Length: 184
Image (cartoon, rainbow, N blue to C red; front, side, top):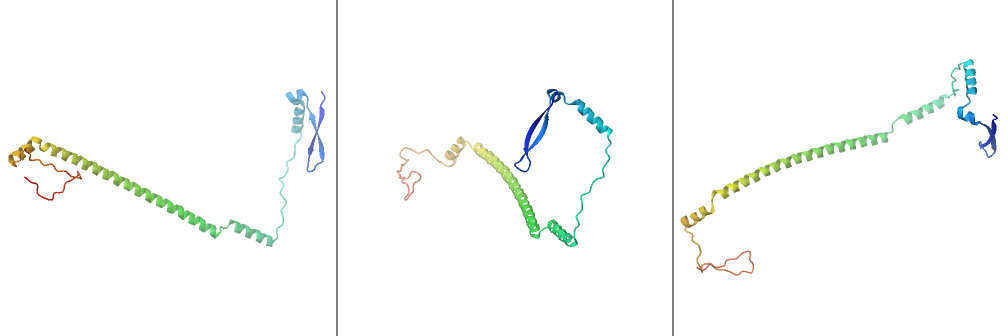
């Protein structure tokens, strides 16, 4: 099977086209790969012993003493902290710590107030219960019959007869001002 050479162009740093030739593989080579050629190459590689090279060092530049001093001074300045930067960082840290302390203080104050509110609510509930119990005992202490007997028998009160009730007309129905004695 013949392999055809295909030409392709590319541009390398200028507008002039350069020709590169790529072999075009047959269908069989594309499908199964070129196993013979691979086997031959690997046999050749294993037969050849490649001598090990010593690692190459990059050539060292010679530095003059004045240059060395300048370089070390630049490195020292780059590594050294600027005083303004240090003060800024310290101020930021102090502000953050102050904010945290303030937040903790406010949270403790809120918790204390909540506990006070709970205590006062419990006291209010106890007082309301006592008031309800006292009201019930007062209501059950005297009945209406007892009140009538005391009023009529001990105090001498009687029901009003016809003509004893006097009606007054007032512009304001909430209260009446008395300027004279009530006639009998």
